[in-house]
Image (cartoon, rainbow, N blue to C red; front, side):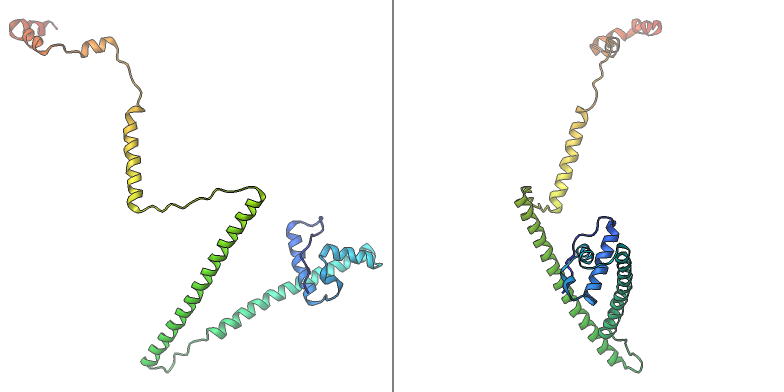
Length: 222
């Protein structure tokens, strides 16, 4: 049996609590098979305090020894995982022996390797599909939990747009921004003097008045 991961003593930090939990799991898995198998670390320490006549110093010493032993076992377990991984890889992917092979044998070997790659790709695709399915189920379950709690989220729909639709939306946005350009400009009022100077009046009268000697005199005087 294994230890259920229970609360840790409040005097430990979060990282220390995680380390102690992992260490105690290893200790229980390898050494403890009695009543302590159903206790968490804090409950187990309380059990030692009640059922034994050990002093606080003795209990602290035992706890330190257990944690030290658990740390050693944790390192050993990690090294065992690395060794197991290497042995599995060497078993499934043996080293290639290419010496003394003819061209035809090399071609057959390449075909065999390609077949194995295809098989691995198919297995990877199946695993990815299972992972995506499980993730979707988790999202649905979390949504149901939130709905039961009262925080119902609105159902959002993903809208797929084609490239033409996105291009049309962009051009519409550009046209609307160009149309609004003049409306955003400030209106500047002209002075009356500038308006009088800018007003040419009737151009025919101006031509008649500026023609002949009289017109030349006016130009000379101005």
